[in-house]
Length: 219
Image 1 (tube, one colour):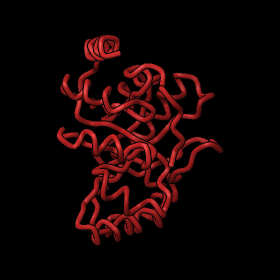
Image 2 (cartoon, one colour):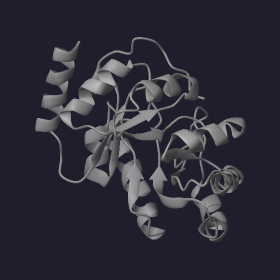
Image 3 (cartoon, one colour):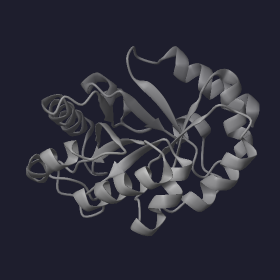
Image 4 (spheres, helix red, strand yellow):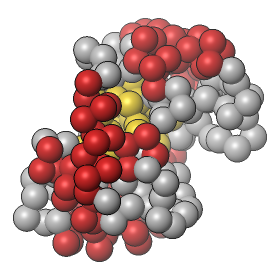
């Protein structure tokens, strides 16, 4: 497995554009694969399920890794996620942002937050609309205990690649409007379009790790 993983890593690095950072989406993959990639210099890893992530984090505690939470964040998991992850990509409401900020202060943590925006109709995904984000922006700026650093978005599965690039460009423009440096967008099937549109984090799983060993539900 390590040899094929190394080959995928090398091929991806050879094709990597200037600017974006790679977030290796390790959900559904073992700690051994994460350790292998860390040996190549990859330090940022994304997990979407707390109960799957924690054993990996414990077994890899000797490595200086940065853990990103990329799944849907349930309110009853906020404290544990704040303790275990330094970056959260899936803040989809003012209520959740306020809860994360309050608990972060209690825990003596200061996570970086990305606000999940929904710029197309898609019943499978949540997130802020443009208008909701504009209405909440002043309150978001006033939150203590967190750093709001960017936006995150996902394209509907049925959207063609040119439509995805347009969506990513709109997300980048919205981030610029609020003077947010980071844009987390683009996955294994559309990362080139996201990179061209101004993504700063590309979330890649299967193109890097190969097929998942098991399915990991968001949570």
